[in-house]
Image 1 (cartoon, rainbow, N blue to C red):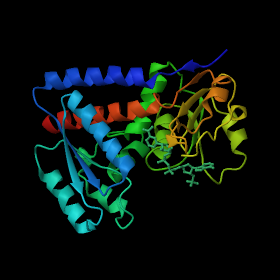
Image 2 (cartoon, protein in one colour; image 1 turned 90 degrees about the horizontal axis):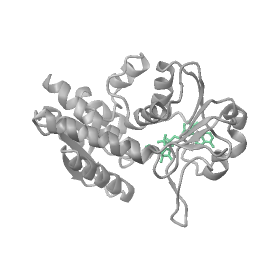
Image 3 (cartoon, rainbow, N blue to C red; image 1 turned 60 degrees about the horizontal axis):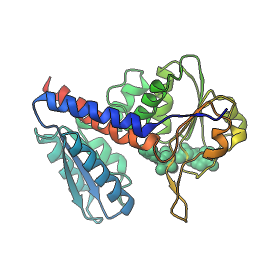
Length: 280
Ligand code: NDP
């Protein structure tokens, strides 16, 4: 039997409608500041997408575009000004930054209460401690997808493929908090296919196009594909070979239309949450 498709686009649309209703009821306009340094074309597209989604939800998006040669000190001063601006509820610095800027210094400069990406060490710490406050948008979106698809995490064996600070690590912490038994796999993991085959829930976040093959998937498992990769022919693919894995999995997310739209919706949710908590 082919896998059930977990429709992230539909769930994200529902979430965005709910957020828009909450914003309308809040009686004020939350403000999200997006800082973009340099001309990276993919980053520009992401920022435009976030900007449009924010506006549709009634959130004001302010994009601050800085040249690629911006000095770290100037970038930190921009962030400090946003921290100090009482009108700004959320701050997001679009990654990757130009190579000469240390991203960690920038992330650490953001007020943790306005850190809607959830990358500040304080928010990372709360999550690691099992007391999540601001949770990174992509793993948060994945948890919402699992919940909406009625996938049981308690007691499930989960394998997270990838250990980045943005996806893999926070993902594994959320799954542990949700009572799964979690393995984090990475580029030095031995016998990756065998590790993955043990998973009731397999989360792929490697950035390696269609790396996960059908014989890596336990029959009936839930496969969540975080990857977004563009093939030379322009086709967008995930980190999972979709057609062959869908023939084995019990449920699977497509690319596009899976995790991607949830990331944007969760950014809006984090912004609204930050705005409400600042005013509470
Ligand atoms: P990173 O490059 O930061 O991390 C990739 C991780 O995958 C690393 O931990 C790396 O291991 C591991 N990895 C790479 N190659 C292999 C391999 N051959 N075997 C096993 N593990 C491997 O990527 P991100 O976490 O930022 O992103 C991952 C994917 O998710 C990308 O496709 C990205 O585009 C996508 N993405 C999608 C989002 C969405 O909204 N849907 C949001 C963010 C990212 P090691 O640590 O050992 O190097």
